[in-house]
Amino acid sequence: MKIIADSSSTRTEWSLVDCDTVVEHAYTQGLNPYFLSRREISHSIRLELPETFFKHRWEHIFFYGAGCANEDKNKIMEMSLVAQFKTPVTIESDLLGAARGLFVNTPGIACILGTGSNSCVYDGSKITRNVRPAGFILGDEGSGADLGKQFVADCLKNLAPVKLHHEFFEKFSLTSDAVMDAVYTATSPNRTLSRYATFLADHLDNEYVVNLVTRSFERFFDRNIAAYAEFRHLPLGFVGSTAIMFADLLRKVAYTRGLEISKIARASMPGLIKFHTD
Image: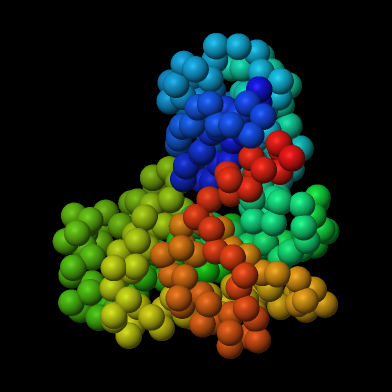
């Protein structure tokens, strides 16, 4: 039996798998080593996972995580997991998890549109090309954090429609000062901004919202997918909550770039289970 985990900055999905059967399934908070210390990661794992996950020493743990893209951060995650499970661990990026989740063992262009965004060319086993996502301040175009950032900025500068502005502040019980504190002083501002973006999904009948989301997706394609021009023949897939919430607009923007999206999935886990049990 093995454990497969897929972690964004917001949420981690865990599956305890026996062959191709899911014995136990659970969620914990997102475990991004850029935002959490080794101790915080260990604490979350131990307190949030069901006891079933700790009953035995398993065959292996495959952990795919946001922020797990360099040796130092991967080491933090590995030490936390080994300390809790006493089991061999393989740490991979959430992007490879998305690619394997979308395409299993066939080539494709895999994209994440969730709290953050990312993209790559996948050869059916590993990533062969990747445009650096650069995070929610310098990049992450098309992500929930990017949408939330653009919308909140417009609200603070009185550029968003007044009715929409007031409804948003009322729904989240916010003031301008509270927004500034949440973005500049609280932990995980990318998660906060992405949560604000969910408000936009409820107002897709508003022209301002449609234009804001469309521009963000256009930047994602122009600043990321355009770099893979020689791989246009490969299927294009997306995984993540933002891709699901705004799927129709995402397909329309892809069409304007001469592309067709073959698959939009909420999560990578079903494909990851297939990849690791085939």
